[in-house]
Image (cartoon, rainbow, N blue to C red; front, side, top):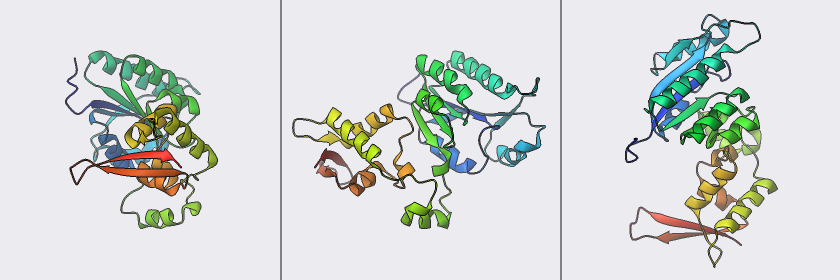
Length: 248
């Protein structure tokens, strides 16, 4: 039985065939927000030149490479190895959740099975990731938003959001999603707690993230949309405020 008072233990399984090796440091820092990586494994046929870039970062980040030869042309043996390991780890009872790093829809059933077993499942992949895999995860994070903090160009891009191809526009569909979610949670005066709003948006769309729209947090995103009213309520602790939002 897991001790829920401790930081959740995560198994990080990386499909080297379907994600780029750039920004590995930022990816692992992102994962650390959700728990402690107990297992860090990366799967590939390491004899192939296409995964050479990964080799330089494995030792630095203590990621264990798993060699998997392609036994048959056209078949992805890496997927099978990841799935088998994931089930072995699940039955070991040593983790609270999984982080599957891949842009491949072949892991949709695995994510569903792990969640059926009560596991937290976080997906990380590129924006080209098929929707079924995204929907099967509790939360899905796009690799494109995990940019190095030292990258001065990323700061410039935030100020000129239209030029940054990784940033989505705040459109009517997003506003409709937020509006509907506020209505779902609102009290008799129309106010909804921002924390609960963020959780509901994630349940509706696992790939929802304010960073997709160029904002570091939920509150700046809400404030940028002129259709919502924000109330920051004091709690007696000057460092903590309860934020509520409602439709104007």
